[in-house]
Length: 430
Image (cartoon, rainbow, N blue to C red; front, side, top):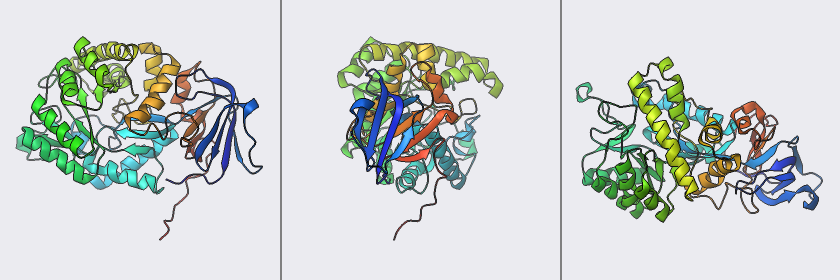
């Protein structure tokens, strides 16, 4: 991804650097050759060249680019399970993902970690973004997911004679688990996404208290993935599933819905981050009927929401790490609503805006394994910055509206926001 070759000065705004530190009033950020060279008060800012590009924050907020830590780039207006993997061919899915990625960038999300992707599209999507062919967040990829036979994602009945290779590897036992990971190694992914537990969406066979993988299968996934320097995460709601994942050596926990004291100790012992993805549950409860969800499913989502709120608070208050994001792309939880997760964690969960912004920037970058490159406004890091009208500490919901973004920068280049030029057509040099 190209960097701005010159100097950019962002001024006249409060700086929220993503570390959790108090805001800096009347702050300035100086970016040179795509890298942050100064962050601090205006009265101690260094001199800059006369031709430096200047961005006026209009008294608003200057903060690191947001990180969507559970990004399903290939999900698009899903209303039923069939929409996950057989609604569209891979050619159209690829086009939809480019739309979702551009939208994420326009919403201030300069980076994202894939939480599972149809047809391995995110690997090639990352390449297109990094080569400036299309706009989108910096990506950590995961490709196809892994689930045991009969588990949450093995929903196509055998009589249909339809495979699920585009969405998920269905495994039976440890040899299948190793084989699936090795296929992902060849695909070029960075994260292996698994399904140790069920979900409220499948109350008959795989509800949110059901285990969908054995410990032995999970351990085989981890051992094989770590041997090839891949990280492993998993959809973990059930208490025992969370603990199995942590004992098996998982590098991240998705949801962590019903964590108990033992699970929390295991999480903290290895400093494993958790991405609760709670706004999806709230949206399912509030809009489920509108999209035909049964009352039984909605009630399950309410139980998951209540449990997830308690678990997320316990993790953070105990010194654990939370990432923000999750499961956007459903009809009732569409792409573009990403920042509603942040508002939810302030207004419903009770975290402070500074805590939530830290989770959505610094911790997100750490989960991606790139915390030394971006995620905070610090000298030496990439100039991935968002400039927003208004005070996000007073009202974090400002981040929900794309129209409030003055500028979204990657490597010092303005890619989105009100002052952004139309995205140029890039002709690759031979």
